[in-house]
Amino acid sequence: LAKTTQPISMDSYEGQEVNITCSHNNIATNDYITWYQQFPSQGPRFIIQGYKTKVTNEVASLFIPADRKSSTLSLPRVSLSDTAVYYCLVGDVYSSASKIIFGSGTRLSIRP
Amino acid sequence: NAGVMQNPRHLVRRRGQEARLRCSPMKGHSHVYWYRQLPEEGLKFMVYLQKENIIDESGMPKERFSAEFPKEGPSILRIQQVVRGDSAAYFCASSPPPPDTSYNEQFFGPGTRLTVL
Image 1 (cartoon, rainbow over the protein chains, first blue to last red):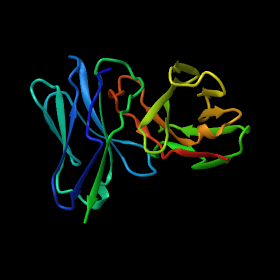
Image 2 (image 1 turned 45 degrees about the vertical axis):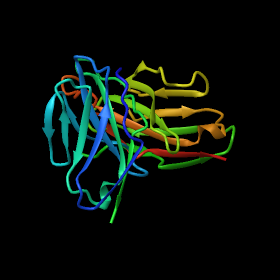
Image 3 (image 1 turned 135 degrees about the vertical axis):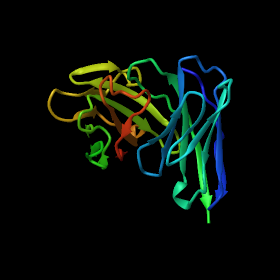
Image 4 (image 1 turned 180 degrees about the vertical axis):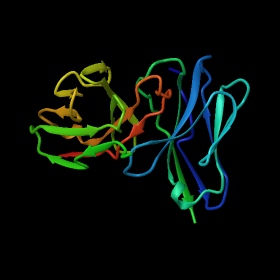
């Protein structure tokens, strides 16, 4: 499983765009990149997944450069409710269901 | 469609007692995973089960911990003779069987917070 590195914490303000970058230098050909969000006292929630280029859904966008050695989760116009821990993880797209390896995540704090 | 259910949400035990944590997966999901989270840390995988089978228990402590997912009823994580170090949040997740399994997409419950006095 490829190891990921992401900032321990980030601060921003309401209405700003927040970009959280994750490094995964040893990503394998079959690996997908997945992001989870965890609010305090809740279980993690899947928010977005991608393989290359750009993926967008109603919650966030995920940018993946051509070499795939990093990825950036982009949260547009954040609000206080986006305060959470964000986890980046990578793994084999062709593997059957298996455990998720969570890192320490990025603790995002949004201020008014 | 109800999400993953866990109960109890909070559990207090004294050292030496047993803790039983229950998890009901989402409807139609046959894969269940248990994770443990210490304060200010990420989740750590414990065990992965399918109905009546343990698929991967590489994260389970060798002693005092066991898990099951019977043909009928919820999955149970059992901790015998609890110690203070077992105090943590225990999360259960579920995913559907193939071909509906989306890689790395698991649905998590709200967790059970175990406090050992």
